[in-house]
Length: 403
Image (cartoon, rainbow, N blue to C red; front, side):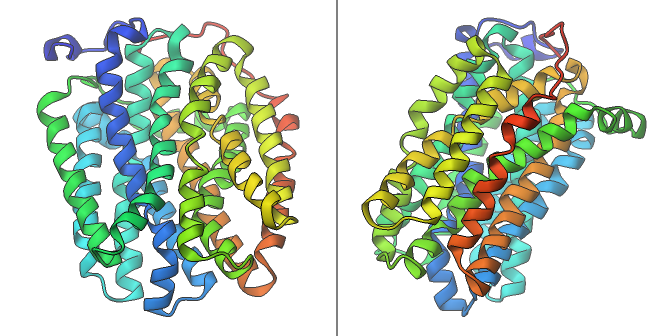
């Protein structure tokens, strides 16, 4: 691991292989913060049964996580500007573990909603500081690959969340599973505090003039729309897929969770391919292709059953996982280095609020009032507009590395 003193100021960008150890540590933190949020998807049928929730109420629980996530990211600049990106990463890691440990003591719907909002807030501090740290310490020609490695974390979490639930459900209640994950998260957070050496430079405080400058960039708002589509087609769909399969397609809950986990294994492989393709083909072409193809797959999920539906359950997440490497790389190229973390702290929470919060709530509402299939059809149709949006993206020509 790199010496601590070397990161007191903005690090000198290096080839990815020289920073691989630090990159893997950051990816581990991202994995746990993501798993903490996604573990509730395979647990949702149990929560619905015990708490007497409707599909619509279940969908709003993910909206609470998204609201907390949104509030954390838009305010993350205040923390990273005062305590450096390393401090923000530590607060995030400790906060996720603490929120999970407190969760089992919530016995009402209101208490659960508050706990999930706190969890979302803690998790939301990670991405802006991690993005700034990675793009500062890694040379720009390796951004696609480095961000691809970082993005294996959510894909691994999506794979393991339902499989862990299936493995632990015979031993623990859903509350016990959450508490167990909280203990693991706190342990890794403490290891990061004592072992990791990265992020010792300050972020950009969200000054009104800087925020106004970012808001005037049309490409920023285009990226918000693209991130909302990508997150809605991956996390938003993931959170409600078990309810769709169980209540509308007649799947056994255990089999639905098993399929949910196994279908995300492909993301562990394609994310590296996406990073490699981004560095060679360009961000706009990669983004347009994967979002359009993912939208087609969602439309097919909405109108098929049986074996073909099972095939789409595996194909769609493989396509969706390819977005985030080119997406974050594109986000890093539309603004100067010093405001990358601030831009990420504005764009990604807006995208997550819509894709990870509004989309599950919408799908739950449609599942309750019309059908999940109708909700999926609307979501897939919206994603088909991605190629048109990417045509209007504008990147900085210098491609600056560093802070």
